[in-house]
Length: 353
Image 1 (cartoon, rainbow, N blue to C red):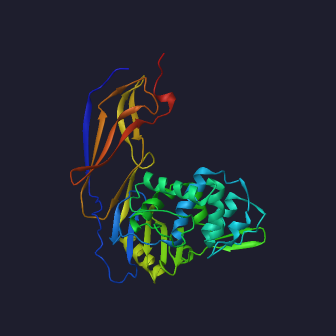
Image 2: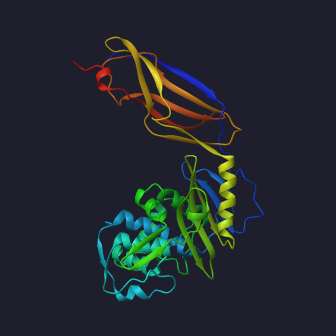
Image 3: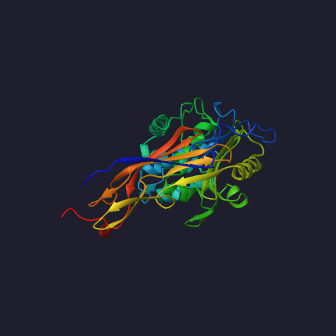
């Protein structure tokens, strides 16, 4: 295959990217600790005391759920140990000696916050509460949750059991990439045998675009809530800890954030470049981003796109082969980049004959 000299194409478009903590701290939010994070990019839109270590109650079950999903077959059968049925607090009312699937127990844990369900899943997955807590802390370290410590799978108050709003947003962003997790936390109601469970998360009914995630409460922690909402192709995560008016807090923050920000996506469906090509005859070859790039914008800062692509290419060309680079700059600083690859029907790009 003959090579061609690369050309730098710079396209400037009037978009903007997010300035960190772009909201001013608000006095109409009831929570002690708060964060709003873009699930697509990881940008923080709003924060207030987001790194303070706090009791998190049943938000703990977010970590429990993702570990069970990643380490167990959801169709596995679990025989309920009587000791698992008598954990204090909220319950899905597992029956001792009865068999349930992992999936059914997950639904009872995430919809009605069953502490019995969390205990059963932890012991099934790791053999003991202590063994599962070790797994939880290893996952927290892997995700960079540096201000978190887990001692149990359900979130009942315990010494050295804590997290922060930022760490929980980081965890939830990771979890929302898992299709099974998303299905579970967005389910409004579920039936296991003769028991019906209704999701405790009122935002699924009351907040536009809400797709999960988890409520929590103990006397010591107060009301805790993690939610995720999607509007106009953008997902945001909101975490409030110690929030007497958490439902309204989340809806206020979402309404302002979705009104202020938008997500610009560069992927194979939304962005491409045509490269002049000699096939057997002269034509053009399409190049598309190999991976999706997402940029959060609010209408203020200039975004520049630089394409590094060949001036001319010659057959044979490998479909999906390397074509060049796409780079997105925010105010002149590189913000994201990915390879550009060829995306054309094999019939049009020649062969190695």
